Image (cartoon, rainbow, N blue to C red; front, side, top):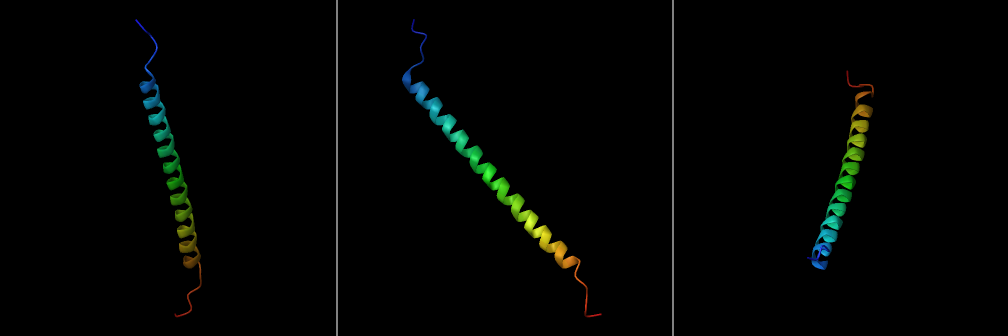
Length: 56
């Protein structure tokens, strides 16, 4: 009996591995963008919070 995996099975595994790698890269990109947006938004919020109030 041949112990070697069929070529199509190896190609399928390679395609799945490539898709998983692409998915993980996309998720990392989204995570980085969320963190940058949060940092910028929070920074703007704190900048506005620390400004003196002139209308009292």
